[in-house]
Length: 295
Picture (cartoon, rainbow, N blue to C red):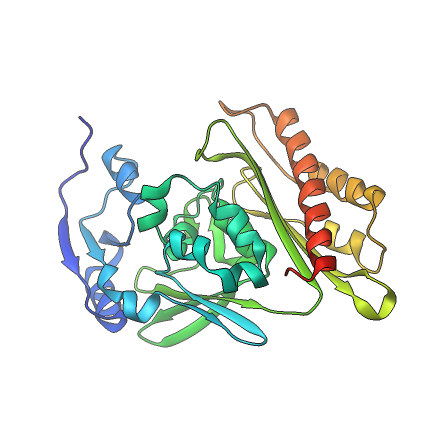
Protein backbone atom coordinates (compact mmCIF):
# COMPACT_ATOMS: atom_id res chain seq x y z
CA UNK A 1 0.00 0.00 0.00
CA UNK A 2 1.29 3.44 -0.92
CA UNK A 3 1.12 5.92 1.95
CA UNK A 4 2.44 9.48 2.28
CA UNK A 5 5.36 10.41 4.47
CA UNK A 6 4.38 11.56 7.99
CA UNK A 7 2.97 15.09 8.21
CA UNK A 8 1.30 17.40 10.71
CA UNK A 9 -2.24 18.69 10.18
CA UNK A 10 -3.57 22.20 10.80
CA UNK A 11 -7.10 23.50 10.15
CA UNK A 12 -7.46 27.15 9.17
CA UNK A 13 -10.45 29.12 10.45
CA UNK A 14 -10.09 32.18 8.19
CA UNK A 15 -8.07 33.38 5.22
CA UNK A 16 -5.89 35.47 7.54
CA UNK A 17 -5.36 32.48 9.81
CA UNK A 18 -4.31 30.36 6.81
CA UNK A 19 -1.85 33.03 5.67
CA UNK A 20 -0.44 33.25 9.19
CA UNK A 21 0.08 29.49 9.30
CA UNK A 22 1.83 29.54 5.94
CA UNK A 23 4.10 32.38 7.08
CA UNK A 24 5.02 30.48 10.22
CA UNK A 25 5.48 27.06 8.59
CA UNK A 26 7.12 28.24 5.37
CA UNK A 27 7.75 26.02 2.34
CA UNK A 28 7.26 22.88 4.45
CA UNK A 29 3.48 23.49 4.39
CA UNK A 30 0.85 23.07 1.69
CA UNK A 31 -2.80 24.05 1.55
CA UNK A 32 -5.35 21.30 0.97
CA UNK A 33 -9.03 21.58 -0.01
CA UNK A 34 -10.28 18.69 -2.17
CA UNK A 35 -6.90 16.97 -2.17
CA UNK A 36 -7.65 14.76 -5.18
CA UNK A 37 -4.41 15.77 -6.92
CA UNK A 38 -2.19 16.52 -3.94
CA UNK A 39 -2.78 13.38 -1.87
CA UNK A 40 -2.04 10.90 -4.68
CA UNK A 41 1.23 12.72 -5.32
CA UNK A 42 2.06 12.49 -1.63
CA UNK A 43 1.25 8.78 -1.59
CA UNK A 44 3.66 8.26 -4.47
CA UNK A 45 6.26 10.38 -2.61
CA UNK A 46 6.34 12.78 -5.59
CA UNK A 47 5.47 15.55 -3.13
CA UNK A 48 6.45 15.64 0.52
CA UNK A 49 5.29 18.26 3.02
CA UNK A 50 5.70 18.41 6.78
CA UNK A 51 2.37 20.21 7.25
CA UNK A 52 -1.00 20.23 5.52
CA UNK A 53 -3.22 23.24 6.18
CA UNK A 54 -6.88 22.33 5.64
CA UNK A 55 -8.89 25.31 4.30
CA UNK A 56 -12.29 23.67 3.89
CA UNK A 57 -13.71 25.77 6.74
CA UNK A 58 -13.16 28.87 4.58
CA UNK A 59 -16.11 28.06 2.32
CA UNK A 60 -18.09 31.07 3.55
CA UNK A 61 -15.23 33.36 2.52
CA UNK A 62 -14.05 31.66 -0.66
CA UNK A 63 -16.90 29.56 -2.02
CA UNK A 64 -19.07 31.68 -4.31
CA UNK A 65 -20.05 32.60 -7.88
CA UNK A 66 -20.86 36.31 -8.20
CA UNK A 67 -22.36 37.50 -11.47
CA UNK A 68 -21.90 41.22 -12.09
CA UNK A 69 -22.72 43.26 -15.23
CA UNK A 70 -19.13 43.51 -16.43
CA UNK A 71 -17.35 40.82 -14.42
CA UNK A 72 -17.84 37.35 -12.97
CA UNK A 73 -15.97 36.56 -9.76
CA UNK A 74 -15.54 32.98 -8.55
CA UNK A 75 -14.09 32.09 -5.16
CA UNK A 76 -11.19 29.69 -5.12
CA UNK A 77 -13.07 27.17 -2.93
CA UNK A 78 -16.02 26.88 -5.32
CA UNK A 79 -16.60 23.17 -6.00
CA UNK A 80 -16.66 21.63 -9.46
CA UNK A 81 -20.27 20.61 -8.87
CA UNK A 82 -21.25 24.21 -8.21
CA UNK A 83 -19.57 25.33 -11.42
CA UNK A 84 -21.41 22.59 -13.30
CA UNK A 85 -24.83 23.37 -11.85
CA UNK A 86 -24.78 27.18 -11.98
CA UNK A 87 -27.25 28.23 -14.67
CA UNK A 88 -26.15 31.86 -14.40
CA UNK A 89 -22.52 30.90 -15.05
CA UNK A 90 -23.52 28.65 -17.95
CA UNK A 91 -25.56 31.47 -19.50
CA UNK A 92 -22.53 33.79 -19.45
CA UNK A 93 -19.80 31.20 -20.13
CA UNK A 94 -21.14 27.83 -21.33
CA UNK A 95 -17.53 26.67 -21.63
CA UNK A 96 -17.57 26.01 -17.86
CA UNK A 97 -20.44 23.53 -18.08
CA UNK A 98 -18.90 21.90 -21.16
CA UNK A 99 -15.68 21.31 -19.27
CA UNK A 100 -17.19 20.25 -15.95
CA UNK A 101 -19.25 17.54 -17.66
CA UNK A 102 -16.03 15.75 -18.66
CA UNK A 103 -13.93 16.36 -15.54
CA UNK A 104 -13.36 13.24 -13.46
CA UNK A 105 -16.45 11.78 -11.74
CA UNK A 106 -19.16 12.89 -9.25
CA UNK A 107 -16.97 12.16 -6.23
CA UNK A 108 -14.22 14.46 -7.45
CA UNK A 109 -16.69 17.11 -8.65
CA UNK A 110 -18.42 17.16 -5.27
CA UNK A 111 -15.19 17.89 -3.42
CA UNK A 112 -12.59 19.33 -5.80
CA UNK A 113 -12.28 23.11 -6.16
CA UNK A 114 -11.49 25.61 -8.88
CA UNK A 115 -8.58 27.05 -6.91
CA UNK A 116 -7.14 23.61 -6.25
CA UNK A 117 -7.28 22.75 -9.94
CA UNK A 118 -5.45 25.93 -10.93
CA UNK A 119 -2.85 25.69 -8.17
CA UNK A 120 -2.03 22.08 -9.01
CA UNK A 121 -0.78 23.45 -12.36
CA UNK A 122 -1.01 20.09 -14.07
CA UNK A 123 -0.33 20.56 -17.81
CA UNK A 124 -3.42 18.45 -18.59
CA UNK A 125 -5.79 20.34 -16.28
CA UNK A 126 -9.01 21.31 -18.08
CA UNK A 127 -10.08 24.31 -15.99
CA UNK A 128 -6.72 25.97 -16.57
CA UNK A 129 -7.54 25.91 -20.29
CA UNK A 130 -10.99 27.34 -19.55
CA UNK A 131 -9.65 30.19 -17.42
CA UNK A 132 -6.93 31.00 -19.96
CA UNK A 133 -9.50 31.09 -22.75
CA UNK A 134 -11.74 33.49 -20.81
CA UNK A 135 -8.84 35.86 -20.06
CA UNK A 136 -9.16 35.22 -16.33
CA UNK A 137 -7.21 36.99 -13.60
CA UNK A 138 -6.16 35.39 -10.32
CA UNK A 139 -6.38 37.25 -7.02
CA UNK A 140 -3.57 36.22 -4.66
CA UNK A 141 -3.54 37.33 -1.03
CA UNK A 142 -0.70 37.47 1.45
CA UNK A 143 0.05 39.38 4.64
CA UNK A 144 1.03 42.40 2.53
CA UNK A 145 -2.32 42.56 0.73
CA UNK A 146 -3.72 41.42 -2.59
CA UNK A 147 -2.22 41.26 -6.07
CA UNK A 148 -3.86 40.30 -9.35
CA UNK A 149 -2.06 38.03 -11.82
CA UNK A 150 -3.40 37.25 -15.33
CA UNK A 151 -3.82 33.58 -16.18
CA UNK A 152 -1.13 33.88 -18.83
CA UNK A 153 1.37 34.58 -16.01
CA UNK A 154 -0.15 32.43 -13.25
CA UNK A 155 1.53 29.16 -14.24
CA UNK A 156 5.31 29.35 -14.09
CA UNK A 157 5.95 25.75 -15.14
CA UNK A 158 4.58 22.25 -14.55
CA UNK A 159 3.17 22.14 -10.99
CA UNK A 160 4.47 25.66 -10.31
CA UNK A 161 2.42 28.85 -9.95
CA UNK A 162 2.79 32.52 -9.08
CA UNK A 163 1.39 31.84 -5.59
CA UNK A 164 4.14 32.24 -2.99
CA UNK A 165 4.76 29.92 -0.05
CA UNK A 166 3.00 32.34 2.29
CA UNK A 167 0.13 33.31 -0.06
CA UNK A 168 -3.27 31.93 -1.01
CA UNK A 169 -5.31 32.11 -4.21
CA UNK A 170 -8.64 33.62 -3.19
CA UNK A 171 -10.56 34.48 -6.37
CA UNK A 172 -10.63 34.26 -10.15
CA UNK A 173 -12.15 37.12 -12.16
CA UNK A 174 -13.47 37.06 -15.72
CA UNK A 175 -14.45 40.08 -17.84
CA UNK A 176 -17.94 39.98 -19.37
CA UNK A 177 -18.46 41.50 -22.82
CA UNK A 178 -21.45 41.51 -25.17
CA UNK A 179 -21.65 39.30 -28.25
CA UNK A 180 -19.71 36.44 -26.73
CA UNK A 181 -19.83 32.67 -27.10
CA UNK A 182 -17.60 29.93 -25.71
CA UNK A 183 -17.15 26.17 -25.90
CA UNK A 184 -14.88 23.36 -24.73
CA UNK A 185 -13.78 20.17 -26.51
CA UNK A 186 -11.82 17.24 -25.08
CA UNK A 187 -10.46 13.88 -26.15
CA UNK A 188 -9.75 11.42 -23.33
CA UNK A 189 -8.90 7.74 -23.24
CA UNK A 190 -11.86 6.94 -20.99
CA UNK A 191 -14.63 8.91 -19.30
CA UNK A 192 -13.32 11.30 -16.64
CA UNK A 193 -9.66 10.76 -17.53
CA UNK A 194 -7.01 13.41 -17.95
CA UNK A 195 -7.12 14.91 -21.42
CA UNK A 196 -5.14 13.55 -24.32
CA UNK A 197 -5.79 17.07 -25.63
CA UNK A 198 -8.46 19.60 -24.68
CA UNK A 199 -9.30 22.96 -26.20
CA UNK A 200 -11.34 25.93 -25.04
CA UNK A 201 -12.47 28.73 -27.33
CA UNK A 202 -14.21 32.05 -26.76
CA UNK A 203 -15.39 34.44 -29.48
CA UNK A 204 -16.89 37.92 -29.32
CA UNK A 205 -18.74 39.15 -32.41
CA UNK A 206 -18.99 42.78 -33.45
CA UNK A 207 -22.65 43.60 -34.05
CA UNK A 208 -21.78 46.88 -35.77
CA UNK A 209 -19.98 45.11 -38.59
CA UNK A 210 -22.45 42.34 -39.31
CA UNK A 211 -20.98 39.74 -36.98
CA UNK A 212 -17.25 39.83 -37.71
CA UNK A 213 -14.90 38.64 -34.99
CA UNK A 214 -14.10 41.45 -32.57
CA UNK A 215 -11.93 39.17 -30.42
CA UNK A 216 -11.22 35.46 -30.05
CA UNK A 217 -9.17 33.32 -27.70
CA UNK A 218 -8.14 29.68 -27.62
CA UNK A 219 -6.54 27.77 -24.74
CA UNK A 220 -5.15 24.23 -25.00
CA UNK A 221 -4.29 21.69 -22.30
CA UNK A 222 -1.98 18.65 -22.42
CA UNK A 223 0.14 19.97 -25.29
CA UNK A 224 2.91 21.77 -23.41
CA UNK A 225 4.44 22.33 -19.98
CA UNK A 226 1.40 24.42 -19.02
CA UNK A 227 -1.86 25.55 -20.50
CA UNK A 228 -1.14 26.95 -23.95
CA UNK A 229 -2.59 30.30 -25.02
CA UNK A 230 -2.59 30.96 -28.75
CA UNK A 231 -2.20 34.68 -29.53
CA UNK A 232 -1.62 33.85 -33.20
CA UNK A 233 -5.18 32.52 -33.39
CA UNK A 234 -6.47 35.74 -31.83
CA UNK A 235 -4.59 37.79 -34.42
CA UNK A 236 -5.75 35.60 -37.32
CA UNK A 237 -9.45 35.82 -36.46
CA UNK A 238 -9.74 39.51 -35.53
CA UNK A 239 -11.93 41.52 -37.88
CA UNK A 240 -12.85 38.58 -40.11
CA UNK A 241 -16.16 36.93 -40.93
CA UNK A 242 -16.59 33.52 -39.26
CA UNK A 243 -16.47 30.65 -41.74
CA UNK A 244 -15.36 27.06 -42.03
CA UNK A 245 -12.23 28.25 -43.82
CA UNK A 246 -11.42 30.55 -40.90
CA UNK A 247 -11.96 27.78 -38.35
CA UNK A 248 -9.67 25.49 -40.35
CA UNK A 249 -7.01 28.20 -40.50
CA UNK A 250 -7.19 28.60 -36.71
CA UNK A 251 -6.88 24.83 -36.32
CA UNK A 252 -3.73 24.78 -38.42
CA UNK A 253 -2.24 27.53 -36.27
CA UNK A 254 -3.10 25.60 -33.10
CA UNK A 255 -1.48 22.43 -34.42
CA UNK A 256 1.61 24.40 -35.39
CA UNK A 257 2.03 26.48 -32.22
CA UNK A 258 1.50 23.87 -29.49
CA UNK A 259 4.37 21.75 -28.15
CA UNK A 260 3.15 18.26 -27.24
CA UNK A 261 5.35 15.31 -26.31
CA UNK A 262 4.91 11.68 -27.22
CA UNK A 263 3.78 9.69 -24.18
CA UNK A 264 1.45 6.87 -23.19
CA UNK A 265 -1.56 8.95 -24.28
CA UNK A 266 -0.41 9.46 -27.86
CA UNK A 267 2.28 10.57 -30.23
CA UNK A 268 3.29 14.17 -30.85
CA UNK A 269 1.80 13.98 -34.35
CA UNK A 270 -1.54 12.67 -33.04
CA UNK A 271 -1.73 15.38 -30.37
CA UNK A 272 -1.02 18.13 -32.90
CA UNK A 273 -3.81 16.73 -35.05
CA UNK A 274 -6.17 16.78 -32.06
CA UNK A 275 -5.14 20.33 -31.12
CA UNK A 276 -6.11 21.50 -34.59
CA UNK A 277 -9.35 19.55 -34.82
CA UNK A 278 -10.57 20.46 -31.31
CA UNK A 279 -9.73 24.13 -31.88
CA UNK A 280 -11.82 24.08 -35.06
CA UNK A 281 -14.77 22.43 -33.29
CA UNK A 282 -14.63 24.72 -30.26
CA UNK A 283 -14.50 27.86 -32.40
CA UNK A 284 -17.41 26.68 -34.54
CA UNK A 285 -19.59 26.07 -31.46
CA UNK A 286 -18.49 29.34 -29.87
CA UNK A 287 -19.62 31.32 -32.90
CA UNK A 288 -22.93 29.44 -33.01
CA UNK A 289 -23.57 30.30 -29.38
CA UNK A 290 -22.54 33.92 -29.84
CA UNK A 291 -25.04 34.22 -32.69
CA UNK A 292 -27.75 32.63 -30.54
CA UNK A 293 -26.94 34.95 -27.63
CA UNK A 294 -26.05 32.07 -25.33
CA UNK A 295 -22.80 33.51 -23.98
